[in-house]
Image 1 (spheres, each protein chain N blue to C red):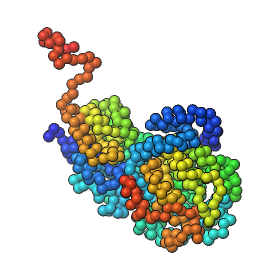
Image 2: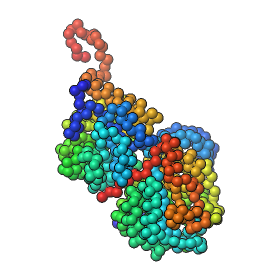
Image 3: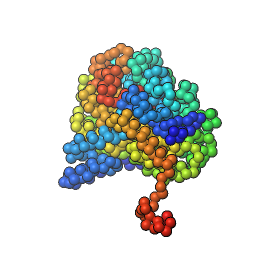
Image 4: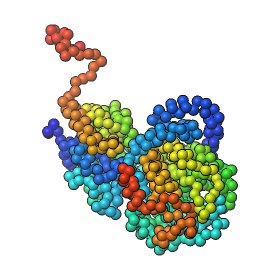
Length: 260
Length: 376
């Protein structure tokens, strides 16, 4: 586990838990959540950042060692996402960008087509592009070939806390895509995150489940542990599932056969 | 643009409500207990949630509404401030202080005066502003509004408008100028009553007003806030019609962020309109019911409501509040006292932004001043 670093963009991280900065009852709690979660990557909605008030906006609560991942929440088209990404870089928020293009205010499901267009464009402008998508293999392949740093499929609609409703689709992405698959949105409890990591996801991004917990700091710690456990299980190589019982001491072991 | 208003013309009236009201009460308890076990509600559940019988289950509804609000919106409250640009009006709305036949001092702010107001408001910490006018296209033409928006945009991250209804082209120009939010309330969904309440002037055109939010959506308006003026008619029927209006818009223009407002009739210029009284219990039931049906939308509460009611509603569904409001034209710089001046209606919660912010923080809710970045 010591050597199990998470490579993303041009950096390496020890933590595979990414968190967000929205929905908290006070921004001042964010550094404590980061400490407890050991998270090293934090996403911030650019629409919430008041660039006219440097030092007083949400960015002032982000510790320096954290990799900032601004997101384009509120964008309804590739053009709007591109505009926000450029604004973010010009305001000193770096060149990492999480693309969120959403044209559905009810379910907040991402528009994969517009997301892909924005990603293709921003990769060419040297952004480290992390697109938030509905898990779809064709889109993920196109994103991989255009140079996206990762794909971020949703587990279920954002904020729904419904867990891995798209589990099988995410599994397909994990199997077929070489760039990191980061499960984003919908993870409601630490056990969901653990399952995602056991499946082989590279990381999880958790916001609502931590931010709206009665005790966000303790919940952040719980997620951190669940993600570590899931990752260790994945690396350890889990035994195969079977519809039959497999005795620890096989009944036909005396024949030196292990097959059922 | 292709126009399809067929569905809007068929906006459900109160017939559903009448049908269920007749045969629902016998088994109301069982129906409601079962209904309130659910974690997901449909618009067809609305009449039950709004029923007199459901008013005995407000606590259960409040628990559900609180949970959904927290889950979908987080522990935050968006805070905005209204700015009245003009109180000239050619309409004759029988319940309104700006009514053309009321002899009040009329005023339209000059650009210089607007700047003074927005400087004062932005220095208080406001970042989200709603510009309001009466309806008088000669006194407040589109060109004036575009100039005002361009000016205000320099000081505010979010600029909304609550003005007379417009067409596609006008909305498109306002969107290009930087308007991202539109608030436009139908006031009353009953066509007959609407006619009586709005006897003269352009506002008497029910359909033009009903369709305007759709024109704004087509023109690229990012957020649209509809609503009804409670107290004109049976509030249950009004909320049902309003919910169907919202559902229609949401299905047709899913990219828009929607919110709903529940202004209750207030005293204006010392007069009180005699409509159908909506008490606090009814009002809270309306808010909770809409929150359960539409967990993702914004619900807005103005300073028409008392400080104590607003305090209690924080966290129960409301996601957007005005603070430190004045409803008079030029009210912020001159610090005018309402009821003696040119205000549209009397406000009830007089606390300023810092008091509201402190209150929210004490309640474990983060005030959010900026939540929009102009796109493209």
